[in-house]
Image 1 (cartoon, rainbow, N blue to C red):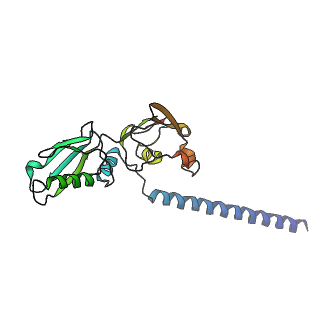
Image 2 (image 1 turned 30 degrees about the vertical axis):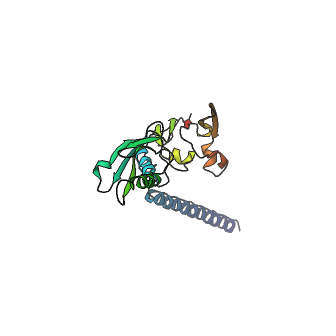
Image 3 (image 1 turned 90 degrees about the vertical axis):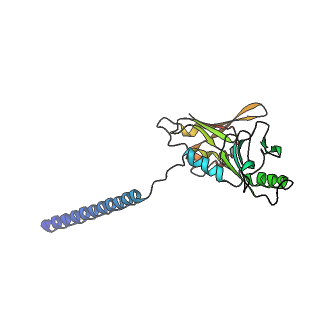
Length: 219
């Protein structure tokens, strides 16, 4: 009887050990498959400032501002085609037309304005306006990020979108205490941004749309 009980106990131990080993092996195999899957997944590379600049220049809704650089091309009229920079007063100067308002318009709107005014001098003018350099609409990122500095402000850009192009946070970054500095009515206003909460879908109201001149600080 004792022998039988001993054999039954040993059998139970073997079954338990085998089951535990099988479960551990299955867990390890699952972990390996997940690691392989993650390794094969392409890494997400944040947009570089140059890429952001290119996107801003190609944005049809981009609004021209003071100090922006423009290429004005009038088809078959080389003397009227010029590279110009928007003056601080928001205007540009062109042959025949003298001063024109450029700031506050999109490239298409400015092209239409130039076209209309040129009709007095040439037949069926065809005008294109290309933004070649952006200096008017910029925000600034500073602190514990990989790529601090000035960044072109794209249409509708939010804090999270701006940070995605600033490189990785440093190991010392306190991403719960990021803040945005903005000048409003002559006073500096501070907006808080908790990165860890926002990327989890919480406190999304902190992910505000940025304005020209805003400064994002990552402490």
